[in-house]
Length: 73
Image (tube, rainbow, N blue to C red; front, side):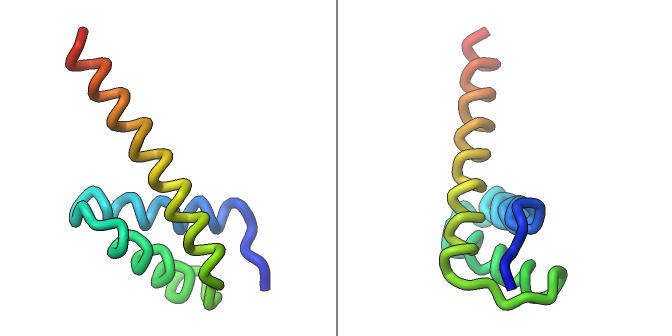
């Protein structure tokens, strides 16, 4: 079964939330995989989890850049 974009985004949110607490992308990877297993009910392939983590990393960089801009203001 393929995951749709909404499901991948949900996995990315789980990865990002975990990264914010642990500062460890491996934990974020695990959180995205566990989210898919427990909430979506699908065993995701590695590529889907890596995509979710990549999206989470982009979102993290957006947060970092926003904070930098606010500090500079």
